[in-house]
Length: 73
Image 1 (spheres, rainbow, N blue to C red):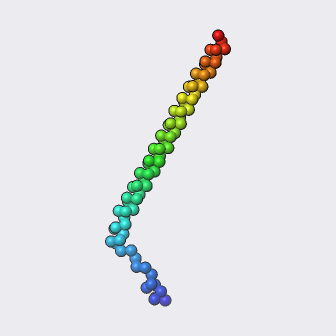
Image 2 (image 1 turned 90 degrees about the vertical axis):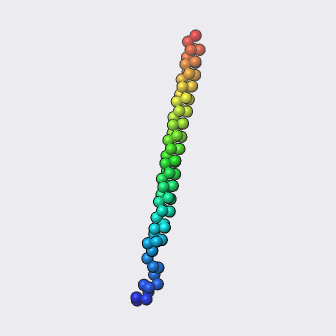
Image 3 (image 1 turned 180 degrees about the vertical axis):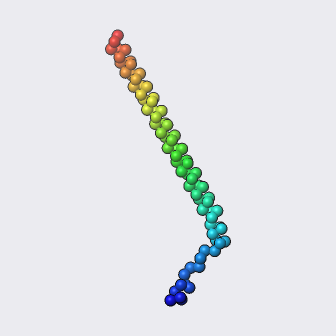
């Protein structure tokens, strides 16, 4: 029974863990940066859509006013 447990992988060595931690930190930092970029892009797209909507509304209002003026003449 004890012989079975000797075949298990040895526990991670502190040196390996110390080498892996900086890599994990870089990947987490990169992930955070990618999430921030995605949020910024979404915010920019939202603002662009809102601006386009306001421009369309202004053009429609101008067209409605032009029709109103043409009818009232």
